[in-house]
Image 1: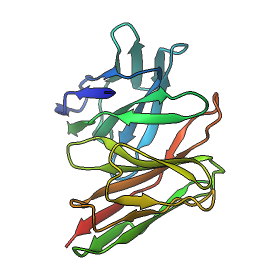
Image 2 (image 1 turned 90 degrees about the vertical axis):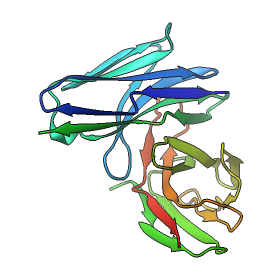
Image 3 (image 1 turned 120 degrees about the horizontal axis):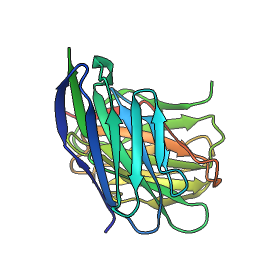
Image 4 (image 1 turned 90 degrees about the horizontal axis):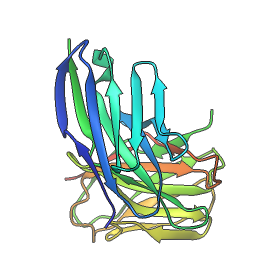
Length: 114
Length: 114
């Protein structure tokens, strides 16, 4: 059975701290791994990692895919209160052809205190 | 602006009632999806549709029904057979063309049984 597991489930840090969120997966026919940030409603896209693009960076956020270990990390440096959100990891599984379905983890709830 | 519109934002259902959640997109995306999110859990796939007049069950389809009569619209009906429908429902769409892949989410509908 396909599985995406995120850890920790929740995390409280202070502004300025660096955090690392983890995502591990067991998914048949892996295509890509995605990170989303969900504040109040719709998740917003952060990164997509594939075999040809295993490391991505945008400002204070960066992510690495380890295909050997079947895992990914999302790093946030110099955290701000605006980083408080649920961070979702999702893995795209291939079913052949153009089908693409995402399998989501449970999410990590990050709270950044002033 | 292109995007996905979900309505209503909040919905209250009495026991034994069917309710329908609306999802409309003007992104010209081929594929559309319905996810359910419960507290402490990630997104779980209810139904998805790759083309008009075709849809497939996801992981938790029991008690739900969908239709895809138009490319832009993918309504979800929560039937009385769904025993625990209180949750946050997210609709998403994506293009099915490889190399041009991306998910867009709606803002969600929060359904509460009263």
